[in-house]
Length: 629
Image 1 (cartoon, rainbow, N blue to C red):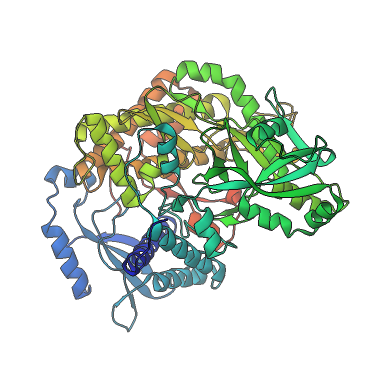
Image 2: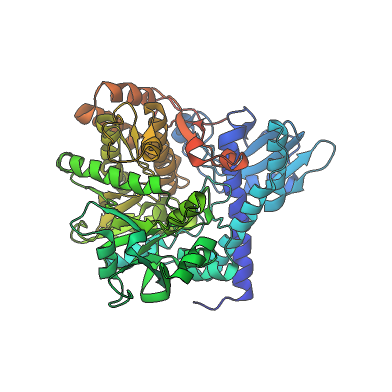
């Protein structure tokens, strides 16, 4: 690990605090202020009582901008710098911050300090904690729920983690070797979700362990193994080998005490949790379990933290973690283990047709799982132990990668702030056959071509799975790998079956006969809820961020990239559409709002992720566009 200087620590803390303000305000604007009519983007001339320092920053920004006249006309308002104004009616306060340009989707680039004014008091510059306290106080007054200290603590945790990983990070170009490029992309998400109030929150983890085991620090470590008596082993497999046979083959030879025990690997964090559970302690004393400690080769944590990768192994290990990471405690409940196998089985039946239609599609199935059932008589305790040990095998990408390609996490390119933009510029320049330029995404035509390849590879199979087969993928930025050859997208890998659901209208209980009622209930979504998930993950979480990173400050390129999306939506309907897709996609092309997931409100109200709500997000695919104003 590199030596951290005092200056590096200070810079990292400043960058983490700044980004925390940006992502929190992103959420508040999209989820609360815009739907409530309390957001406006003021033109440079409408300065009213703005602070002098803000007016100076805005004048400097305007002087350095030369937005083409046709860009302003296309967007309906001046496309250059302006001031974002947010009213907080319950707090009787206002917020101001300069932005590089209006944004229909809420993807603002903030270019000044953040200012607040309460009635009767002068303007004040806010730090991140003051901004968070201001917005949470307003939300509490709006909803009558009071202050949410839990969310405030999650934000503190997120800022601390971000500062720590920024201080040790050493981002650079991706390697040409596939495994090295894959690991680097998975471990490069230094800032996290751009529309989440606490994108790097990892609760109940010590600072030392966070640095030791977080992917962003370049972590790699041996797994911790337990041996479980086979009568207490719970497993299923769709493969020609059982899950424990595959795990044994990937573990150090001779590790199991004898044939009456099976090996079960866990994440080091989880080993500490398990060793403190009273039922596990009792089982260890009785010999039903044995703790074997850290053993064997080092595995790399991927961006989800709990999914572990070794370049020489065929399968990833998706482990349980009893740690809340962003929205959820990341443990594998039994119904999630069953659901992964059910989706894998369904996708095996669909893949021949899907591959024929969409040659660049690969799906990383999850065909086996294992856990522990202590059968102690304590039903609640046994369930806790089973969830804590639950582990899923995920197929690796190695056998499906096209010659000359490297697999890169989409989030490393599109959801990774300045570092993602730099990597994206390098890829576009590579595709163009030249060196990366200092700013922008390179030649406009190549950026459009690059993005068009990506949209086609990803959007077509995701939409077809939903409309033709009732399978709801969640193609958000951490669930998509992009196969890139000579800088250009040539294939996509969809992963993480925990997020894959099935429409109740298409799959009856009889169709899901191999799983429990709890698993069926978890798998079922209505067609409407399924569409919200697909449309949010695809168009908002994924394409909005991709366009933002590719276009940067180029308003014309932004408009042309959204025209690319529109053209592909139209082409998809012509080639693969049906009556259902004609309605849904027709509404989008006519300008219906996109669904935006409410990450801030989910955390504020402490809602389960399945119970998320959606707010309307501006739809740039419409022929006639109008930015927020």
